[in-house]
Image (cartoon, rainbow, N blue to C red; front, top):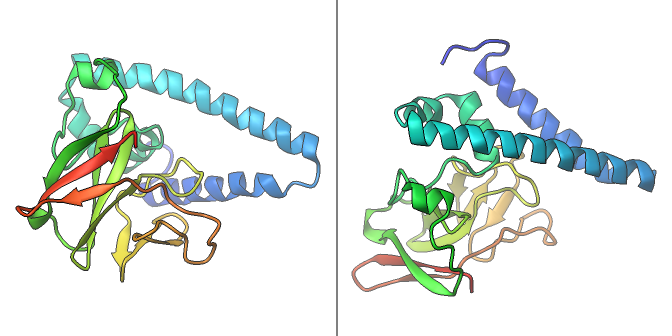
Length: 211
């Protein structure tokens, strides 16, 4: 889609700058101001999340052909990804209405088949969504890992991140997470949520949910 106010590169820079500014809120010296700013940001988040989810639902149901066009637009893709509205690119590229907007919703511990390790490329992060969880499936040095698709406590997605020497590199901040345990290289107190993964003899990958 054609840019209106900002070209893609400036839009991405603005998003990154905004994320950095939000991260600095915790450094504010006045607790009351910090709490008020956090509440303000949460209110903005919910205002955007509710409206965007309604819009996305309407598009998927009535204008499904627009999804591909939206996914290829950097600005739109970034905004919708912040709210986990784009799902699964390993197995189910387009979820059914029941899966996306309701389904049976039973959340019990189970193993979900998500692909075959023999078909995954080395050092590529694949996005998969199930039961509201958006996960990155990563294969590096012959091992398969699964981590939550967001950088730390932020809403910024990690799909598209580079993988180098067993580390997932955040495309926004440049921070590196060790895939074997999820720990950030420069700050051991920060870590990605990991999911259990098994790989069968034939290469079938199973992802553990609600465990």
